[in-house]
Length: 178
Image (cartoon, rainbow, N blue to C red; front, side, top):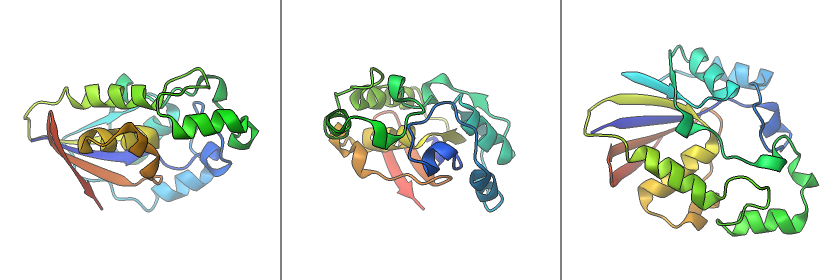
């Protein structure tokens, strides 16, 4: 049974300033956070393609393979935009309706489907796989693993450098926190 260690990238300026992410680098705060982290022992490492995830994996001492399915939620026209500058009605629609994508990018239901399809590619291998990705990807993985409705996506909180562990196989994942 595979064991996935899903690690959220270290902090960025976009997170600190409540902006929708673009391909942001790690902030100085994020680099300091990495000094206090011990990476789990793994057999192989994967990372999302964005610079903040690649840099986090490298700082953990991992030679990671880029996995395109782990890319961040596509926020399209909202990328790099402060959250407080988005029209309230659009933001409310996005935060309450998982099929809504007023930014012109990826809806939450589509994100969950993408991440679920990726999780479904794992076989019965007993590998320990370290995965550096984004909070949205980890939230989608948890929702998929639990078979929860898409509306549960916003009820999962993922901090920078937190580790969420998934154990199992296709169709049967368990979530281990902490």
